[in-house]
Figure (tube, rainbow over the protein chains, first blue to last red):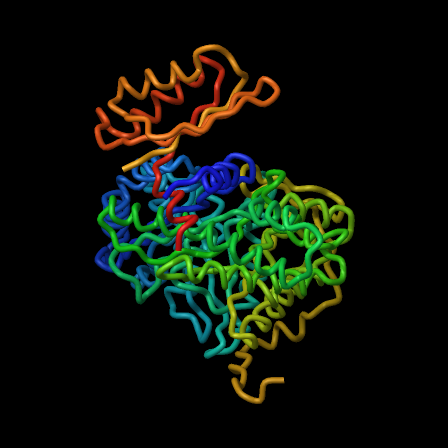
Amino acid sequence: MLNVKAIKETVNMIREENLDIRTVTMGISLYDCQSDDTGRLCDKIYDKITTSAGRLTSVTRELEKRYGIPIINSRVSVTPISFMAGGIHDTDDCVRIAKTLDRAADELGINFIGGYTALVQKGATDAAKVLVESIPEALASTGKVCSSVNVASTKAGINMDAVRAMGKIVKKTAYLTREQGSIGCAKLVVFANVPEDNPFMAGAFHGVGEPERVINVGVSGPGVVAAAIKRAGDCDLTAVAEVIKKTAFKITRVGQLIATEAAQLLDVPFGIVDLSLAPTPAVGDSVARILEEIGLERCGAYGTTAALAMLNDAVKKGGVMASSHVGGLSGAFIPVSEDEGMIAAASCGALTLEKLEAMTAVCSVGLDMIAIPGDTEADVISGIIADEMAIGVVNSKTTAVRVIPAYGCGVGDEVSFGGLLGTAPVMAVNNYSPAKFVSRGGRIPAPIQSLKN
Amino acid sequence: MKAVITVVGRDSIGIIAGVSAECAKYGVNINEITQSVLSDYFVMIMIVDIDGLVGDFSAFVDAMEAHGKSRSLEIHVMHENIFDVMHEI
């Protein structure tokens, strides 16, 4: 039964508090595109993607209109390309596939396509090695392709050879895209325990256990949560957690509605709703401001990790009940350049890389969209990656690193990526060298799962 | 099936008449109106029945929004399902 109070609340969330559906992502399997001829492989990939997702943007526009809620992005994720490049021994051929994905994304009118991916947590196949090697060139010569590499898992440990390689790959990507603020690095994520049904970029790909096609939806709504906490006034943290839970429930229900309807209209199975608080650079759409609303002078102050842990947990508890299938990255995102409050906190020195690392132990994803000085050594970046992977592996959670060593920039500079990718203040890194540790290579063994302390 | 029409803007004569006429044109029956004027600011929530809708829902949404623009009003139309899922367990 419709009542005026509920109508007002929903309308207010959408019009005033930036509630939106962040992404409707179609996962598409490319297994049937296998070919030993690169040209033929590219043609089949292009046809499969454009045929499968041909109606994706028109369906999301229709749903946007029906429910009056903005659907910000329509996207596609595909089978990790390293699985498709079995017969390919040349990076140029891999880049050709990347360009094919980019062309398909243009044809569909979507803003990103994910799946230029390799899973190398235990070791790399020849194809995965070639694909990883090709990432800088692939990201520099395309606009919409997103890349991810899983280098660690709780069951396999940390592949330090891959960690060492990724430090160099990140640096090279930054250099090749130096004219655009090293934007290539904004489309490259290094993961531990990567989820295979994540609808969010840059880490989305269509995992090995997924159906032929699937619809996954990522919700948003940091502004709604911040406003609800503000309305709750001077209550204790038990009450704050309750407010967050109830709000997350409502946000996720909208995601579930859009996901099931999109799946039905496209005649594709519904996969998961990703229960995420995904910020944007817009004022009133910030996860950092939620933490400040809870009671911190600035995001990054002592207490930030505890507040974020509570926020993340409450979002999951509220969201899980609202959706029939939950997956992806589910939790609060803390990408610095994409969050107005994080940008402000990093700019004034309240938020440091070390604090962000601590925060990643209790929330979704990891060190995300952080600009660091362009002259940061590849070994230091590998060290940053190794630390973040260790947090994920030991705590059985997803963690990731998406840092941008902004070419030609130093601490205090700002790098602008445009749109939802936002603006990042270049943050200081600890430049003491981990070179010997990183160059040892090999694998850090999988951690013991008992004797927890 | 129902939809919710929200109308917000500076008060003037004939706002309800204009919105109602658009509804009638599309075969949309008005079930309930909640309306107030605060400091010259007009706010209305209309619950309407769209079972007899002429044409598709998107066209009706476009027509209402266009009508809003022509009268400097912010008019939004939303299908009832979004309210139901959000507020009912």
